[in-house]
Image (tube, rainbow, N blue to C red; front, top):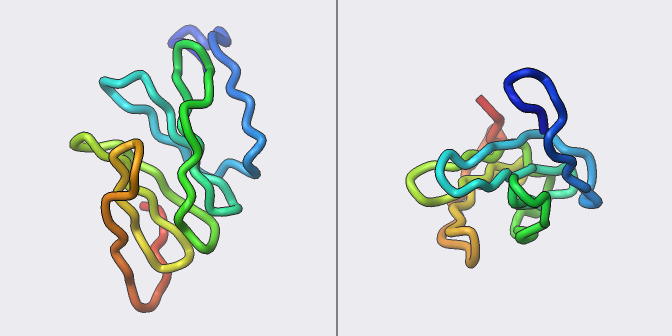
Length: 102
């Protein structure tokens, strides 16, 4: 991670696959990273410590976004999932076409 001046302030070690998207929580100091294997990693921005791995998608996770106290993930498996940074809250299924990032 870089600060406003472009100086590296944090390195996040990602062993979960190729990162496709990331979102930084505005109030909780967390960063979520979507990967090509369907797993989402959640890290503490200050310490770089992995806080959790969110698994639930059957295909690659292409989008993550923090908002209103939840983390929303979208996948090529045609679903969006709502997480309370703990247990899965809900899975929203879609027909065709697969969900894509904005």
